[in-house]
Amino acid sequence: MTQNNITNSKTVLYTFLLVLGILIGLSASFFPTQPSEPDRPVASQERIWQEQIWNTSYLRQNSDIVVKGTVTEVHEARWNTEDGKRPKEITEHEIFHTADIKVENTLMGDTKDQITLRISGGTVGNLSMNAEDAPTLVEGDQAIFFIEKEDNHYELFGAAHGVFYLSGDKAVRRKAPAKYRSVNLDQLRDSIK
Image (cartoon, rainbow, N blue to C red):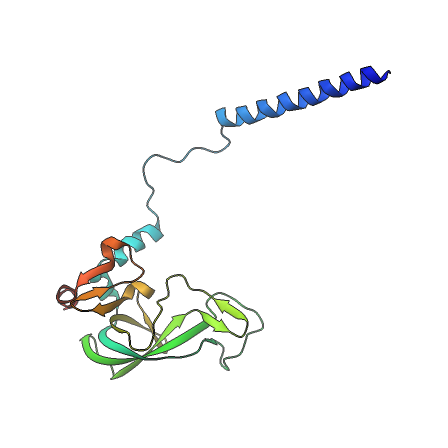
């Protein structure tokens, strides 16, 4: 075979592969391998929960206690093992921290003058766990807290969505969409009764 014939054969082969690639690409757009998504939205359990969480009546119905209080201390994160040390196997929700709340007014349920809330997430040593919906509480925060009793501790019902930070005559959920972020404080109190 001459050098010219080899060059022509390579050119034909490359051209063939290029055309084949284009045809495969075009055919994929005409013949999808998976059915297309329906035009209507599909309800999922997560979406239903997300819609319900914005309703303060839903928060109240699912909380054991609702209080107005002030964060007095936020404690360092720790492991949820008995001794607080790192477990041999790390699984989800193993790092948490706590925040002490001085109760100024109990709006629903029975409680003490102080509650310690358990909040998922934090950093222990060089390992961090980020809980997307966890609130960021700092000392001095005044808020209305929707709380549920879990085994031997208290947690916020709805995580960050169960905290309404007080700002004048408004109660604000920092991680909520704008439509649900702010509510009149008197209206919020009335919805809890």
